[in-house]
Length: 201
Image (cartoon, rainbow, N blue to C red; front, side):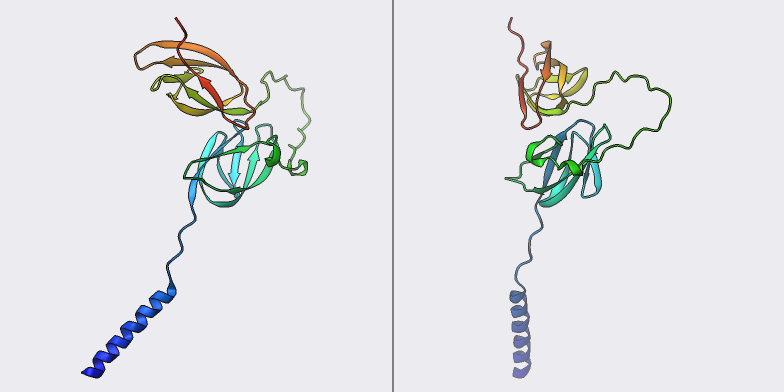
């Protein structure tokens, strides 16, 4: 019986040594939320997969990713970005061909094919896309805000808006409502702060 006990003890010691040699398993790659902004309506592809249209957001793992952006006017460009998250906060990522050091070289921009000859087109009165800006709205906490007639959120909050004039309708928690018009003129490089306080009596 003594030899059987020694055999069992030797087997257990061998198994525990193999487990210790294997070491701890490595953790998974960190994942976080990325907010995309730039030209409103542009399509965003991440590593070849369509994730949405600007403004939009998606979950990404840390590391290098390829971003392809198709603008509403038919041109497109690509960016390679090393995505890193700090303290679990969402990452705001500007995807614009005019975004300084993130802009692609001219050779990376693909021009739209020439139009097929046909009858003269009717002049288009719609102005070209002039970009968008991330806007921080603040004022009386809990006030409901509608922008250009559409419900947008409760103060304080942040929203992506096209550059140009917008009508803001605000209703405070006490039921007081007022309206104002402001012009958004951001360059896409940093958020714009817009206070929506009630007018002075």
